[in-house]
Amino acid sequence: MKKIILFSVVSFVFIFSGSLFAQKSKSEEIKVWGNCGMCKKTIEAAAISGGAKDATWNDQTKILSISYNSKKTDTKKIQEAVAASGYDTQDVTAPTEVYNKLHSCCQYDRKATEKSNLTATKSCCENEKCSNNKDCCTDGKCEKDHACCK
Ligand SMILES: [Cu+2]
Image 1 (cartoon, rainbow, N blue to C red):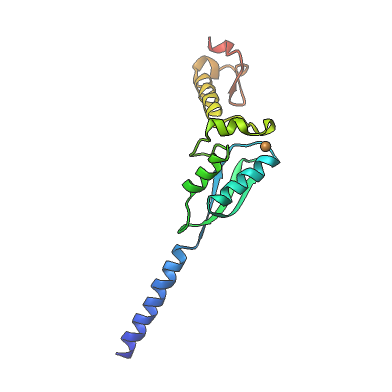
Image 2 (cartoon, helix red, strand yellow; image 1 turned 180 degrees about the vertical axis):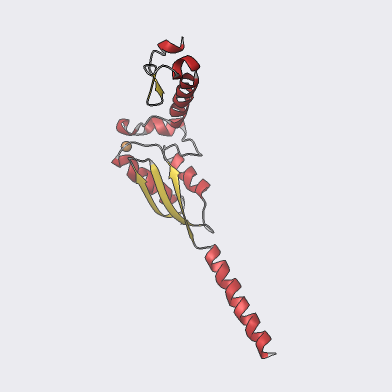
């Protein structure tokens, strides 16, 4: 009998500590568009306001590293807070009117623009005439006039 009690106590402790682990902090990396040190301050503050415990944005890689308590917030909420401050994230796009109010040096090339550029690059470089011609497609990017694709 004693053994059974001991076993239940031990399993209870295991389950309980397991649920403690479940609410432990999560870390994630999110792509956030931006330019400079001023953007960095805004992005990081916005992530904190969205419930992140720690937020560090790298202006070179455009990666926002966050840690947060998964019981209190999630990446979606944090990204929404960042987007509300004017910065596009990988899953949430900032409102244009907020973006337009950013300091001129902070008005980064927007996600949508980058996307359409990527699509243009892709379709051009996948073109047979184009991809076989090194002058037309350099470093995976099409030359501006797209001459060889015509
Ligand atoms: Cu900036």
